[in-house]
Length: 567
Image (cartoon, rainbow, N blue to C red; front, top):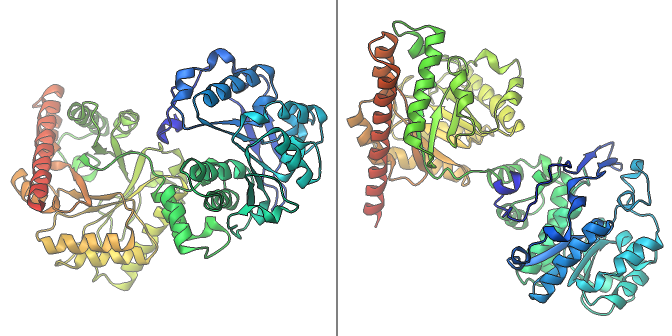
């Protein structure tokens, strides 16, 4: 599932119902010790056989990359060799990451997971049987020691060269890495090198895989070795300076940002600007448009005649039914739903493909206060579904007194920080018109205030402005501070459809506006009639679905019209 989210083709994955996926537990003891325990007894990847290798699948690849560990088991070795031979016959490049783990070769115990080198003539002989099949061989100095059968690095490289014409890339830790395409010189310093990056080492697990990803990117794209090694060293640096393994790796855009800007502090995980780029360029899901049915209202529903908590929950299930009916499995649709009244609908929405925003504010509060189910320090965000977006509405105005302004900023920042800590996207909704007079600059000034406070929402939810200038000012403020934001959704404020159509026409001119989030215009009449017992469940769903669909059509026509005017 994670591979699919990353855009990786998974056609070649085989599922083994008899075995478990391999597991590694990492400890971070201090800046020098990173104890590992491998759970790999009879695991799925070590059960791969020749029959699992599909020649047609292999021929679709740009390169076949093997790991040395898979040469340690006869069945998996046979499968690996089959894939390599198919690749070579098809003219596909091949690479080996030596990745020597002594305990996985049976030459060290389970408690030696951190050990990276134990001499073994048997391992050396086994590796050397297949080194001629590779165009690229990558390893640390210790890994070339095992591949070459010598603890002298230059001698080990020369022994590998005797049995392989591959480019040899030797990783040297903080000193970077060097590539040898021909004869091995007398010094590692004479190899082709890429720049290293002086960063703080925090966690070494995954550094080799990060290095390999950058190296393969450069190699397969035909870059020269100094450039490919620059990519590799940088990806390895990201891995060792952040917590975690795969999540630490940079996106391509993030890598270019890093190269252009340079290092501002050696502990990359504490570089706020870089972390924002990392977050923004590694988000999942295509939300280039979001047509949203907002039924996260609590106070408005509770004030209706006939409301009870049970009936309110049931009605929100009907709202979800209407949203799903309009969505019909298509992308680009969403809901806003609360946990207090709409809990059952909120959880049922998970996995439907809807964009899901979940409110956190106590309705009507000013200064902002929060729903009590968030926990004292927003600790209950860890219980939220990963696909939920943290939504916060703030009634705020540039003319607020200093105490109110500071309270808003402090509380918004606390929630934004908690959302980021829990890997949840954040939507900030600001409504100044309910607090004081507004002009074309009001919302733009507020947007800048929150950015100045270090808050970078993934989404903005803004009022339907009445002028092009107001929209342009708001968009300029966002793009000036965060060119990688998800975008803006325009809210409805219980306006009739005719007013919404006019506001959509203005908003749709701005590409940063991805859609709308409208609630009472869709559900208000149905809610009053359903709570009073005047209409059935089916009639309520039909009415809301028709209104939601009409608004979607109005939005789409507004967007199309904006595109035609731009041409």
